[in-house]
Image (cartoon, rainbow, N blue to C red; front, side, top):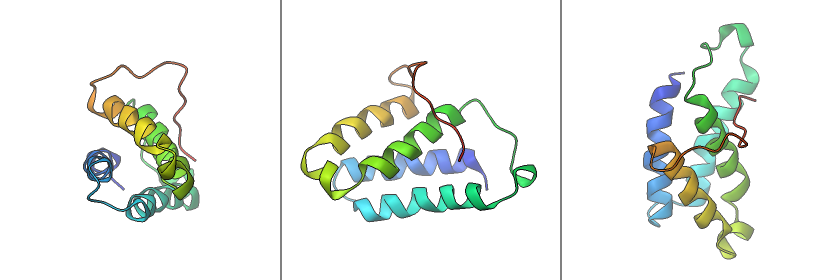
Amino acid sequence: MDLSKKYQELIVLLTQFLNGTLAADALQKFVWEIIDYFSSTEKRDLPPVEEFEKVFWYVVWEVQHLATEDHLEDGTAQRELKEALAFMKGEQSFPEEHIGRRP
């Protein structure tokens, strides 16, 4: 699995989600496929960890947690995921206290 490509795909999908052109379940499906792959693959068979993964995994876990009906209804998902997208695009600095790591 090429995580740099998945990073770019996630930017596109998150943008579509925030613009209202992608359903939450499609975004969830995308992140769960990545989570499942990394959870079920032997660590020795995974690519080496790269620096960009801190932001990537933070956003993956945010999507997994926030792209749900409850958070969509109260506006939390849109607000938090908009910030996460800004981290991915380099428009906002990624805070050191945020944690993003592989499953």
